[in-house]
Amino acid sequence: MTDRRRFLRNLGLAASGAFLAGCDRISQSESGTRVLESAEWLTRRVQRIVSPSTALAREFTEADISPVFRPNGTTMPQTALYQSLMKNQFRDYRLGVEGLVERPGEFSIDQLRALGERTQITRHDCVEGWSAIGKWQGTPLAALLAHVGVKESARYVMFHCFDEWGEDTPYYESIDITEARHPQTLLAHSLNGAPLPVANGAPLRLRVERQLGYKHAKYLRSIEVVSSFEDIGDGNGGYWEDNGYEWYAGI
Ligand SMILES: Nc1nc2c(c(=O)[nH]1)N[C@H]1C(S)=C(S)[C@@H](COP(=O)(O)O)O[C@H]1N2
Ligand SMILES: [Mo]
Image 1 (cartoon, helix red, strand yellow):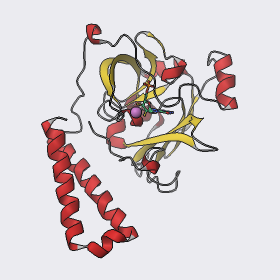
Image 2 (cartoon, rainbow, N blue to C red; image 1 turned 90 degrees about the vertical axis):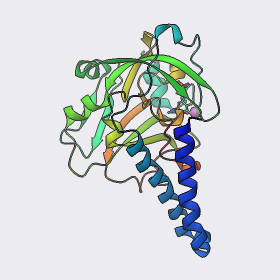
Image 3 (cartoon, rainbow, N blue to C red; image 1 turned 45 degrees about the vertical axis):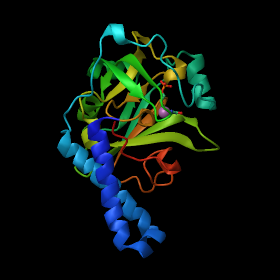
Image 4 (spheres, rainbow, N blue to C red; image 1 turned 90 degrees about the horizontal axis):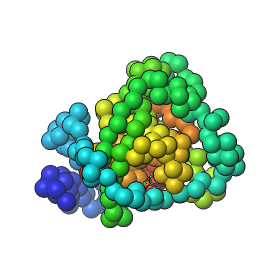
């Protein structure tokens, strides 16, 4: 853990401790959860102050690339739609773009590539305690958002995935608009110079380099620009968030 992360964590704990000490009854109630969430929100605000929203995640060299980029979570989506796209080498794949945008639409990988391209060698950190360094190539999400035109009321970008965890529960994730426009936030189509392997999220996945692995949604089906994610899934902004993980997973 870096000193900065430790500092932020302590600050988060101190803040929630201060709230809870004075509000024992609230901590037992439903609004107690909200107090804890506000501490997480505070951590994010402080992290933004300590490291500005434009700070880049560290980038590495070709020599640092891990021989194997370990796949994790879903490695082969079982849904009929995904299976049929895969049989055709994803030639019919289109990313849906919807929600609070001026020009919603569907984009092939080639259309996305025409909007812009970035390559970056970064380290992926999973909460389960492993890391891997890989070279990612893709379209900056900022370029796609500029192309479709984001409406004033937009606050978050949701990522809807092809794979399901349990019946009718697709994996999903979300980030805020600032993170979405960060230069290293990519819709990646390639890993280490080759099209994404299925195990790592083919044909398109998110890279959001300043956050933990579970934020990097694989198997992207569509993205949706929203003002709130209260009504999506269980309302916590992501599949793992609905199962207790933090929404802001800064490294
Ligand atoms: N759609 C989808 N995205 C996902 C997951 C998943 O199961 N499904 N797992 C997450 C987790 S916990 C991690 S660590 C990374 C793993 O990416 P990798 O398979 O390329 O290593 O993907 C993330 N994105
Ligand atoms: Mo992970």
